[in-house]
Length: 495
Ligand SMILES: [Fe+2]
Ligand SMILES: [Fe+2]
Image 1 (cartoon, rainbow, N blue to C red):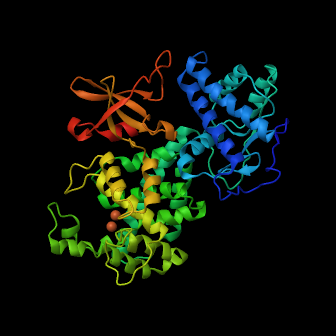
Image 2: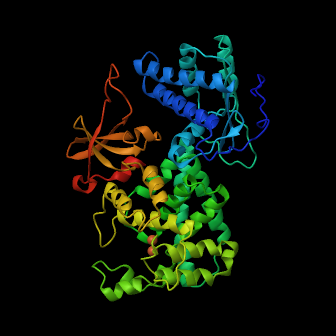
Image 3: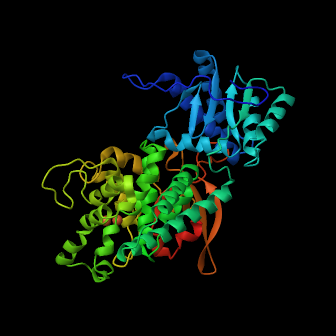
């Protein structure tokens, strides 16, 4: 329960959600519905001013669910403990379809150090609206925010709303502000590239590998993705031709971790997944340079050499004692990433086997990254919508259907870095995808202005924003464009 002094303990009884066979568990469904509506209101308060018609609408939606919950559950208490949200002391399962929005809510609360939110009795619309503006107005990363909020609620005589401090665990790493987080994510990304270089070169010269360093780095990547997915996914989406193999390896690790966390892979295994992703192409260190870097099309013979990299990779991993318990995972990544879901890929198998979960996830990550980025022999990459379409088409054949769904959902229909044309005839670049699965076609977009012979960064707009009178959206995406045709360097907009 929320303690007025602000000292919060663990939830009294931690109950695991049991999902009955006939469908979803009703109380946590209500909790999830509340979070979604509350989050929409929270986001709305950053777009509109408090008197806007839209805020009324969003607040009403939220009030309705609060009422429903208080009627059937007698209380409404959300508590954040580490990476989990508890609704009336039941842990909410972050299922893939609601993952992004639940996660975004968690982050919004965490970065303001608010760990508890409760409604004891029916709350009024004005009360709720005031509260939400107070909440979004808080500075990031201030430990005593909850005290300030409590005071504000008290002076306004708002008795129905309670807040509590975020519980801090010593082993938890980061409560930094968004800018620090971004910097940290970038550091992790570039360190990982260097690490892959180091390891790949080490493999060639048969040096001992620094596995501990690699593990630590992937643990950092996992933390980073859990706190701020968009920076790392953004970096992965930047198209860059230098050092293709190294960039590719890191990107595959990032996509795999992001996919894995949505698919419910436990946190402690996510870094192993990252490792397996990072070194899935380690076999390429044994492919002759002339073939690996060939600018023209590969001959049939060259292809057959290229295809040996999965087996070579498996051999390399098996020969390295340093990986210890990680070996099996690493082998899954190296051996299975071209096998395909229906085993029609390579290496050809003489006996049927099941592709492991890690193998399936790395397959998707590898496929997406390989096509979305330009390389020596493919100067113009496919647009991601084409790739996502292709993935859906090959779902059940090349890829695991359940994972395809999660992957496509994760990247959104307009992934980070997509150049779009808006109904206002403006162009823009997607800089943040929408967490709300009902508004998946409404990302945040950085407008692109043309002046003095070049394209320049304009303001960032939120495509969820409604026009005056809230009849229609202010901007809508009409179609996607190819940034290469316009000579736009997408990286500049994402960084
Ligand atoms: Fe490969
Ligand atoms: Fe690959």
